[in-house]
Each structure stands twice: as C-alpha cells, then as structure tokens.
Amino acid sequence: MDVQPVPEKDPEQWTTGDEPMTGPQQSYLSTLAQEAGVDVPDNLSKAEASQLIDELQSRTGRGS
Image (tube, rainbow, N blue to C red; front, side, top):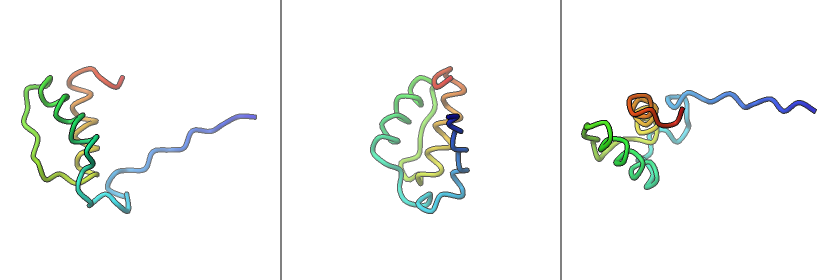
C-alpha cells in the first residue's frame, strides 16, 4: 500500500491563518531570528509566522 504525502496548503489559504501566531511559532521564530540576525514583529498572524519560519529556515540552513 503506497501512502501519498498530503500536499501542503499555502498558509494564505489556511482558515485560521489570520489568527495570532502560536506560542511555539513565536518561540521558534525567536530562535531563528537570533541566528539570522533579524527582528521579528510581535503581531504576526499564523500564516505570516509560517512564511517567515520558512524564509528564516532557508537563511539559517535549518529545516532542510
């Protein structure tokens, strides 16, 4: 039986994407931002935080 991966949904299409970012997102973003030498706004939505996490993972080499 082959298991097909579920395609990721674009964060902009999330039904909860406009809610405030979660605590774990904020914590991980803080770590990534420190490594990347950037500041992270405090009032990001879940979708914005997810997109920034992807960007900072790329910059820092995490999440590969």
